[in-house]
Length: 39
Image (tube, rainbow, N blue to C red; front, side, top):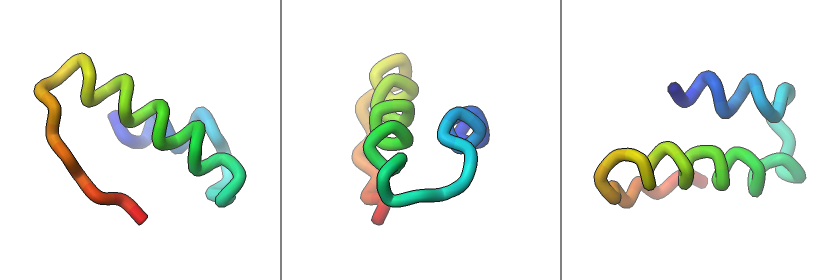
């Protein structure tokens, strides 16, 4: 599931971090709210 988010942004770039964060947020919203700190 996390790979889907990474595939969405392609290469890992700080600029795309917000998109990755939003993608994870959507996944977490579907599941229970788990607070995971990702740098």
